[in-house]
Image (cartoon, rainbow, N blue to C red):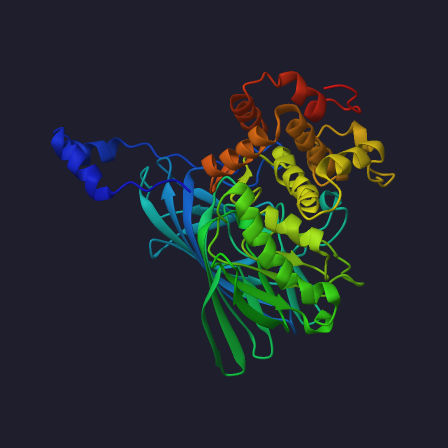
Length: 478
């Protein structure tokens, strides 16, 4: 999220150099052009949009599980990054009822399945702050496909509500967004549901009330968040609140159908421990609340079964063991606070989270990370027959449909442990802390990680990373 420039200070600067008298003529000569329909990501070229930077999403939604209809009003506060004649939002197949820019009706059209093209009443000058309000409704369409191995994602209806896990391109199934990690923003999510249900989202619960057979929940995420990390999970949750030893507020929600499962019972405890202990390794926890959402989606017909590091409150689609909780909490540093600038860099999220699992086991008296490295190196995880063999995947650019291949996780973890062995513990942990500190709430690339690793270690690591990240074969020397 870009820093905002004060209009008052800009006016003073113009006056100081004698340009205020020229402002009307300059305005008349201004050329306005459309914002790009995508950010040019090699995996999702039309995902995200150019020409503006979102500062805040205010989402007011209502959901009826009986009809699966979602009704929403999104108030999006943004800053123009060029002189804009029009701009796009990503909104997947929902019905748009009206669009306003700064309170005035704006023209809009739909192109393709995802693009909402908005033309404001007049051009928006570069650096101007503006608000776009979109009223929309419809039945959100769940996404599937090879990216997540055919599993449903985005907005997924459940027997009593909905589950929302949007990585990588599912945020726009339920709200209009600049749907790419490059544009992080603050969020306020207000959701109204039948009174026997609860809506659990990111951040802090700042409001809750019941009226006319419905219940409304208001959540606020007060640190920058990529759209795919927003959730709005709806169900019959049992909710508990506590505080970690380091004083981080914690809220955990669990589906009552699995509440007695030992892993569900233990999830809050694992979350508390991981939130505090990982801060000792990587620097202070990057958000102002922590917690979990434990669902019951691991059975047919949903059978999602996976977990996602939704910001400040990971989702577990069924009860999961301690290692998975550590993995998802580790993502709060590696993936959520520091996000991929391009989806091809996804190993920087998943490789770190896998290595953190190994390091956690080492620190708690189990196998060392080096022993986990050797076991994985000698016996890599099995790969489905329709996927590339483990050692043949190029981890630094796995292709869109293989971005969650097991090698991205495990070879990513192998790379980091091999780097630890090469540069030593002290430099490796300093590298990890420096990486999350200097890129906090931003995005970064593989090339930037390699550059930082070389600066911290004082070594030329080009050959090392070429072997581990860019070569489609099993490393034999490094």
